[in-house]
Image (tube, rainbow, N blue to C red; front, side, top):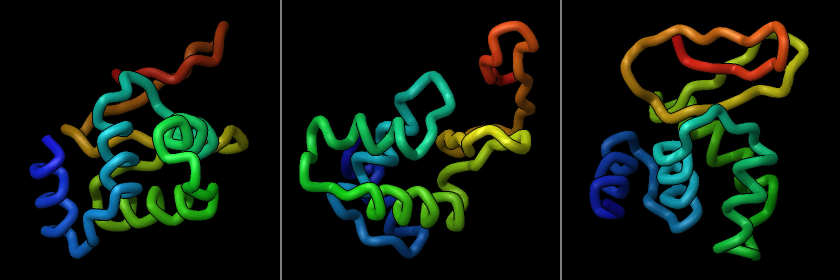
Amino acid sequence: MENALAEELSRCGLRATRQRLAVLDLLRSSPGHLTVLEIFRRIRQTQPRVSKKTVYEIVDSLVRTGLAFCITDGGEPFRYEAAKAHHYHARCRVCGKLFDV
């Protein structure tokens, strides 16, 4: 799995660092839409030396290269997901949860 992710990063012109691999793997395996702070907290469990700035830069580079998407509806924190087939998002009016349609 890690080799496939490394090849994908390389095809997009990104070095396959441990941190990039971890963030991309997390986005691919997460069933939800994560904020950068949530990504940072989860990555920090296995890589305690990673900085919040590094995670922001990694997420930004993944979005720029099309490996991830940024989801926002204005006012809420930006949320991120790994790139997959085109789909829409909706937010529950009762609980506020964001989900794929």
